Image 1 (tube, rainbow, N blue to C red):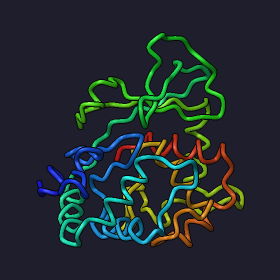
Image 2: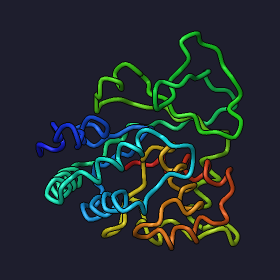
Image 3: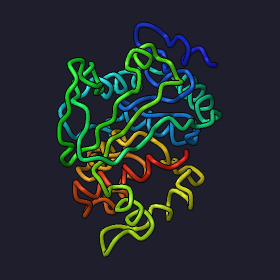
Length: 242
């Protein structure tokens, strides 16, 4: 494991493993890096550094932190981290459950967790992703598992969009991301990744907050997606084996 992943370079460069976990499993608040093409990781760091990759919603601490780290990291540190994470095998750690009712949730810093006082609530038009064991996840355990609750019918709707692109809505995802959505050359795999992360990225592309490599094409492909489309796509893609 490179030193930048294990320890970082305080105070400017935080250890990559402290947020993305040492095995690249990440979490709902950021991205899983395991198995991503090294060239893609390098490009994203460059996009954060240049300002080409932003966030379209209210400012989030993970995005602020990543931007600061990207600006401070050396080329050698970025290359070392990219080579390390790209060499790791993605891990299946998300179970997608379709339901009308979900456990009540609360915010735990930068992700959702099941409310301590219990209770349930309608899912509405949401994907609700929570760690099975919040304490385990908070302790940066890469073995952490997650449940992603989605509205009933989401997976089937998402599969139809992924496979056909829908009636004039978009193009089949396999065109760029590969037949099994596990990536193609420098294009990242998306199968089995956090639905929270996937929806944020689709929305960011749609709002032109991400303007780095590949963003021009992605912005066109997601332009017509509705909120429901995004939820359905994320539910299906996250249910796949990475």
